[in-house]
Image (cartoon, rainbow, N blue to C red; front, side, top):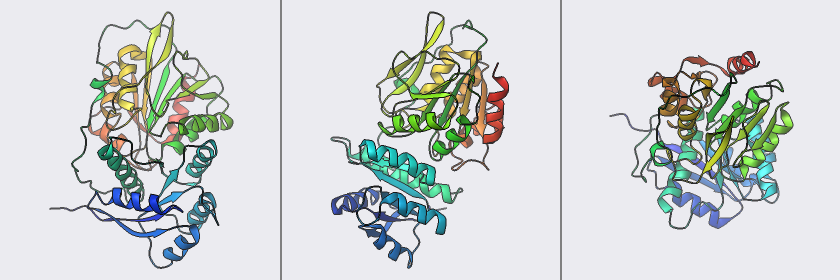
Length: 356
């Protein structure tokens, strides 16, 4: 029997209660071991001289040296997968987005435990650390833990297959991503022309940070990027990023497609879920759709991409070499849900090519 390799973790946070809470949550997984706790980057640096963990959890706002400065030092001297611990503040959100650009892989939002959702909270923290560890060692098996139910898109949106009449020849691009996706999405969007096809994006990220992510992408791109709001019209030259606490779907309204946000259960343990977005594309957009599944741990989006393919939409899975974690694209490929397997540059070129 093949056992999971132990994942070692160093926790860096100036709050003793946060350090202890994180340690307790991570101990719920028998294959995760906290090997050190540091209250500031200087203690962490001293620890790293003796042991190198598989993953570091890192607070952003700390005394003596801030998390961003420490992150840059880690990535330049000895790259280690990093999960960011962030507070729900405007400053924290902006710095977290910068941290993702500097090489951090995942975000955990303080506080970790939601009232009445201890098991879900434990699983969220464990999933983030596992995803980060897989970015370093791609071929790693996962243990099936006793966890809350993993719902499919059926709990949010029912599958329909009515005959769809195209509203126009305009294509609509739907992108889904998780671990490593922020950098991948940035690389794609910032290279697109200003008249690119409409784009809707689900990136697994906590609420509040999705707006900061959208604002940052808007600064870097020639297209207009914003966080999706109820009733937004899908238009050329605009990319809409799903809110971190709502499922993003599309519906027809007259001669337009518009955004419809749904506050439903977690799907594949995520909200927003890529599967929900892709099912919405299959239900309402059909052959006008282009589904793109990027890097990420797990299988969210794989079944939805297959549903899009079944409606004769174009479907694309990111290739293994350019993926930070070849989880979600690999699950889609196992289902033969993709029409193409492309790297990030080829995906950008494809979208640019179909721009009319």
